[in-house]
Length: 164
Ligand SMILES: [Zn+2]
Image (cartoon, rainbow, N blue to C red):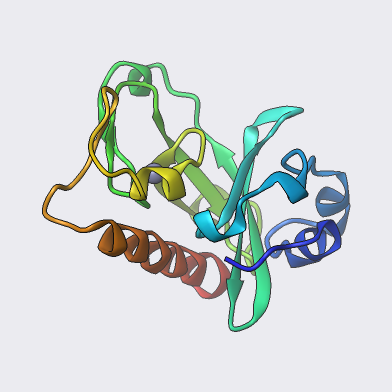
């Protein structure tokens, strides 16, 4: 993806208040990110671990969403498939992430959720040449197809959050 600046990231946030966007903690040093190896910028808030953020480019503009991570004891035991990179991860590596719809209020029914790798490392997982001890891949797909799939599913998720 094309690089993002701090100002672009804060301005891109769609489903939280200006105040929240100003206060959110950014993902470490942006100049250390290998931008051509990631399909989206995704991170957990280091100061509020159950908050997460995803920023992508859509139609030439940065678009970002804030998410809540469900910390469920059951999810720590079972293997689960990530809804973005479609890799199957060992217990505790995938959680339910929910985003408030951009135009809605804060009621539960007005949010959308998907299961995502806890560390939001889907770009990395999609590019794995082969499965690892804790990450199983769909062996019928090429790396290129897996990478494209992350972006397609993320676009669909953003559609639901921004316009659903
Ligand atoms: Zn994933």
